[in-house]
Image: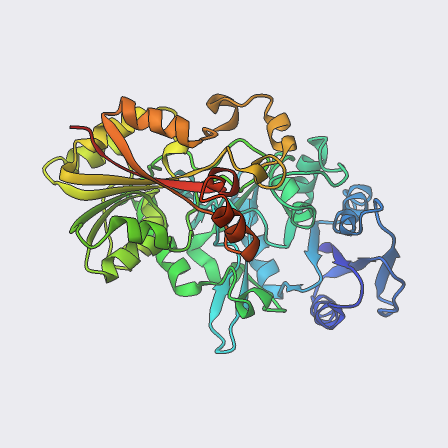
Amino acid sequence: MKILVAIANYGTKNDVYLQKLLEQYRSLPYQKEIVVHTNIAKDLGTDVNVIVGLPTPDPRSLAYAHRRLFIENADKYDLFIYTEDDTLITQDNIKAFLEVTPYLPDGYVADFFRYELSPEKSFHFDRFHGSYHWWPDSVKRFGSYTFAEFSNKHSALYLLSRSQLHIAINSGNYALTPQRSRYDILASAACDPFVYCGLTKVMCISQLDRFLVHHQSNKYVMLRRFDFPKEEVEAQIKALMQVEAGSLSKLRLFETETKLLTKKFDKQYYAPSDPRIVKAVGSGCKNVLSVGCGTGETEADLVKKGHRVVAIPLDEIIAVTAQAKGIETVIPDFDQAIDRLSEQSFDCIIFPDVLQHLREPTTVLTRFANLLGEKGKIVATFLNRKCRKFSSETFTPFDLAASGSVDFESLGIHLTNVKMVRSWFQRSGLGVQHVVYYVPPGRRMRMYNWLSLGLLAEQLAPRFMVIATKRK
C-alpha cells in the first residue's frame, strides 16, 4: 500500500494542528509520501516535502494546489489523501475506507463526517445546518454495509483510490482552477470531485464511528455555529436504517434546492425559530398545521405556548428531529397528508418559506384551505424580490446569468414579491389580511423605515410574511 498525502497549510495559524497531522501520518504502517502545500517556506522535517506557491494570485487557491500533484502521480500510488491542515485522519479511518471501498460501485466514494468536541467533550457535527439534508432514497446496502448520501459534500478532506482518482481525472474537470460553485473556494477544493468529476460521496451509516474525523480547532462548537449533537445525528441514521428496511418512506415533500449557484434560497432544514410566525399564529389558535417542517424550531416554540402542532415534514429523516420536540408528523407527501388530515380542522396553517419552491403554489393553497376552520388563517413567509439588496448583495446578477432565465423551470424557485403572492392567494379563494416585512435589525434600517412611515419597508426587507383568511 503506497499513499500520497497532500495537506493545505496557509500561513502559521494552524501549525500546531499541522504538527499533530504529521505525527499521525508518520505513524502509519504504509509506504507514504507526505506533501505540505504552503505559501511560505517551512522546515517540517526531512520526511515532509514542502511545496511553496499558489495556483493563482487568490490566497484561497492554495487548497487546489494538490490537484496537479495527484494528476502527475496518479499511477504511482494506491491511495490519495487530501486534507486541510486542522482535520485529523486516523489509521482506523483509513482502514475503514479500505475495507468498504471494494464493495462500492465504480464512482462511489466513502465519505467522512467531521466532528468537534465541546468543552464537556460531547460530539458535535458541522455539516448539519442550513439547507443540507440526507437523501432518503439514497439508502443502499453494499455487501454487509449500509450507505446513504448527505447533500453537504464538504468534509475538509477526501480519500480516493487509484481507480477513483482516474474517474475524476478522466471527467476533464478535476484539473480546473478555482471557480464559483455552491461552495466557497476553500470548501470547493474538497467538494468539486463530487460535484463535477463523476464521483458520488456516500456515508457508511452502519459503521458511523469509523468514519468520523476530528476538526481539531473545535471553532464552530465554541461559536455555537453548526454544532449539531451526535445524538440527533444517530437518531437520523436510525431513521435511515428504517428506510432501508422498508418501515419508513423514501419520499421527500418537494425539491428543496434551487438550480442557482447559491444556497441562500434553498429551503432550510435547520432554520432557527421565527418569532414573527409564532406571534402571527397568536394565542387563539389551538390546532396548528405546519407544511414543510424541518427540525421544527418554530413549531417547538408553538408547542411550548400550548398549541397542538401537526407537521408535514420535508422527509421522514428530518421528521425524527421534529418529533423529539413534541411535534406530530404525517407522511411527507401532499396528497397522502391531505387525505389523512381531511377529517381534521386547523385554526392556522403555516407555510414557512415553502410556496415559492412549488411549481403550482395556488393548487396547494386551494387544497389546504379546505382544512381551515371557520375563522382559520394561513401564515406564509417568502423571499422579497423587491428588496433593494436583492440584486446587489442577496441575489447577485451572476446567479441569474448562470441560470439563463428567471422562470421557475430555470431557477427552481419563484422570485416572489407581495403582488405575486397576493394573486396566488386570490386565485386560491383566500384574501391577504396583513403583510409583515422582515426589515433587518440595525439602527440605520430602523431609521429608514421609521422616517418613511413604513413606506420603504418593501425596499428594505429581504423577506416578508402574509396572513390570509378565506374570502367570504
